[in-house]
Each structure stands twice: as C-alpha cells, then as structure tokens.
Length: 168
Image (cartoon, rainbow, N blue to C red; front, side):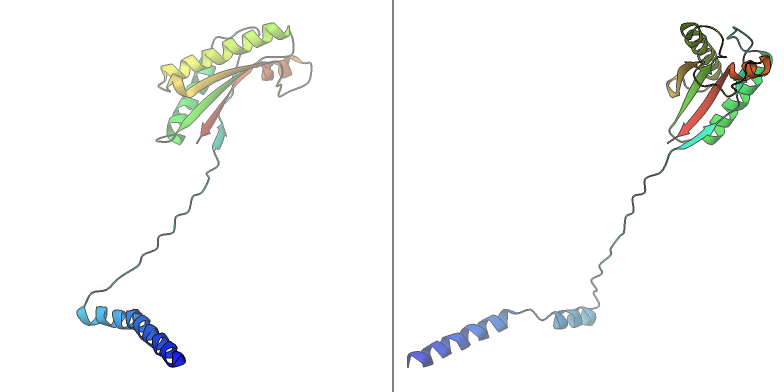
C-alpha cells in the first residue's frame, strides 16, 4: 500500500511538471500563425588599435652660429605647414621640431643654439596657423648628426631643424 501511494505521488508530480513545461516548438508555430516574429540581432564590434602615423617633413638648415630663418628656410617651413594642414586635417596630431647643431662648440652652447633654432621654426609655424599647443620643441645640440665628417659641407648638413608630424 505504501508503494502504491509512493508511485501515485511520483506520477502526479511528474504529470504536474510536464504540464508546466513550455513547448518551444508550439510557441514558434504560434508566432508564425499570428504574423509576429521575434528576431535576434547580434552585432559584432571590433576594436582595432591604430598605430600612430609619423611623417618627417622638409629640413630647415641654418648658417653657422645662427638661428634666424633665411628666405629659403621660410619657404621650407611654409611647405611643411601646408603639408601638416593637409595630412592632419580633422585628426589629432602633434608636431615636434628638433633643433640640431654641428659638432663644434660646447655641449651647453649647442643645446642652447638648437633650442633657439627649434623655437624659431615653431614660432613661424604658429604664424602660419599651426596651433602652438600642437607643437613641441626639443634641442639635441650636436648629439644627433646626419653627417660625421669634419668638413664644412658636413657641418652645414648638421645645422638644422627637423620637423616630425605625429598623427594619432
């Protein structure tokens, strides 16, 4: 008798649970019959890290122990400013002006002269419409030569200001 009671309870419990089970197939068919549909849209998002673009622009050369811009140097800076405006249009960018000197003179003198050269080029960029907040300067003095010979022509190549454009 006890076993019969247990079997009856188990069957009743199973029947009750079966009645509560949702029929997914019938629900899908019901949606089709009523004209409503349920649509699931998955959107894939890809995040790519973009490498900054770096461009070197025209090099401005200076006379011995000078930091003022010659007419030729102004033309180079003007061309660089046009290139900066064209390449960086609508982008987040920075400009670095690097002042350099030849190998003659003391370290302190060349650092100061390189700074004056970089600041002179920066000031002209600002006059040409490049925001000062986007321009930084650095002086390498005689630490980054492009030519290593001890000749007048080589020293002239090292008396320069390099402009680097970084587009983020």
